[in-house]
Length: 274
Image (tube, rainbow, N blue to C red; front, side, top):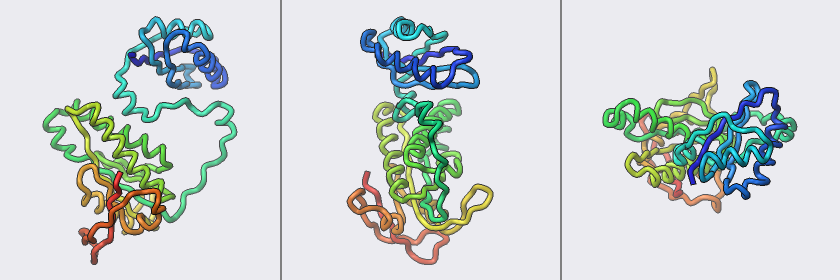
C-alpha cells in the first residue's frame, strides 16, 4: 500500500493529548485497513504529523475522524525508500510520561573510540549526475549514517562533507554502529540499484585531546588513516578496538600490519565481517 504523511494543526494541544489521540488511532486502525507507523508533534507550533500505510487518502481521513475527530489539514504520498533512508527504524516517540522521567545523560569518558566514515567517489558522482541529484544522494547518505549513530549512542563530532567523525564511550557500540551503517547502505543499494552508495569505515581507540568541541591526537589520526585504508563497504579497526570488543559478539579477521602515513611503525588491525 502507499505511504502517506499527514499534517494536523492542533493549537493548544499537549504531548499528552496527541499521544492519547495516537493510541485511539491504533485501537481502530484495523477496521479501516491502515497501519499507523508513527507520529511527531511540534508542541511550540501546535502541529502534529502522522506516517500511515493506507490504501488511499480517504482511509487516512476516516480513521482519524472516527478515532478522535482531528481531521488532517494536508495529506501527501511519500516514497517508502526515502522515508526509510531518512528515518531508519520507524518507531513512536518516547511517551510524554517517559520524557518527564528521563534522567540526565551520563558524562562522556576521556577514553573513547573514534570512528571515521567516508562516502566513496562523491566528487565523481557530482560530476556525473550534477549538483541537485548528487546533493539528494548526499542527504540520503547523511540520514542513513546519522540514524545508526543515534541508535548506537554515538556522538557526532563533525561532518566532513562526504563522511563523519564520531565518538563513542563503548568500543562495542562503535563497532555495532559501523555494522549498522554498512547494513543500511546495503539495504538502500538493493532498493536503488541504479545509484548505489558505498562507504568505508575506520575505528581506533584511546584518549584524544579535546578542544573547542573537536578531538585531536594519535587516536583520531589513526582512525582517519584506517578509514583511508579501507576498501568500499569495509570496516577496518585498530587492534585496541578489537581487544576491547567481546570475542563472541563479532566476527573479525586480523590483517597484516601496515604503516599508515605519519606513523613510525606498522599498526595491527582487523576487518569486521558484517
